Picture (tube, rainbow, N blue to C red):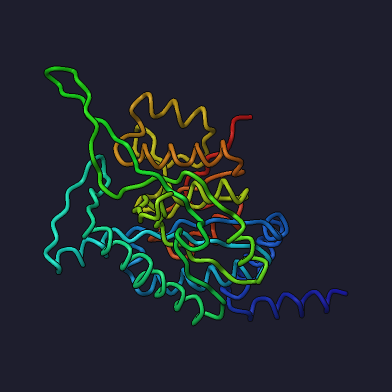
Length: 310
């Protein structure tokens, strides 16, 4: 018996440590793979990670892995920097209101060209090259995202009178038709969605990718919505990462001003998704390689997880 143990120890000592670490990681992932088996996970893909070739390749492989272990991933992507770059090249000027690009008729054509064309098909190609079977579509396909014009108001500081701001062809989801995605998922394909919506009169609307992702996740009863961003997650007043939050705690942080600026609409999207039935929403740093896998398949996670109140 002792000889057998000694031989096992010697064999283990000769094995590279990274092999042993890989084995532990794989076995630790099993309970989480079983937890999410057959469930839908929606990933919002955006930020600077989209412009990094190595991160984009790693992301594509992660999506294929997620599909292969039994989950149903749906990807909704953004593309703000790429849109801005093409608008500059075409010498089309644009302005922003509350972080939303004012979108006239000329701009919405460019937006659709970049989102539904270059970015969407590039991501589909990356996933297919990694061994998956992805199909690209926009919210216009099969009336997936029926949108309406987004309304914003501005208050004059002197007169206190509110006026309606015209953002052009900027929309918000009015109705999601999950049948389109259900059909794709049942065919064992991975849907890649560009956040372009269609109005009731057939007009094209540019929709914020976070907003589109939250609406689709809610309509699909997703187990998880994962928002890839350019920050580590939600930070406290000392700049430290908050690993977990309830909806009530998130609202309190907004009221206190701890959550501010561009993070507020992201959190509001997270809360809306949870109220629509999503089990939990994670805000992750998309610049971290394999952040999606770390969030789904480890106990530690990789950012901030927001869940419904107990």
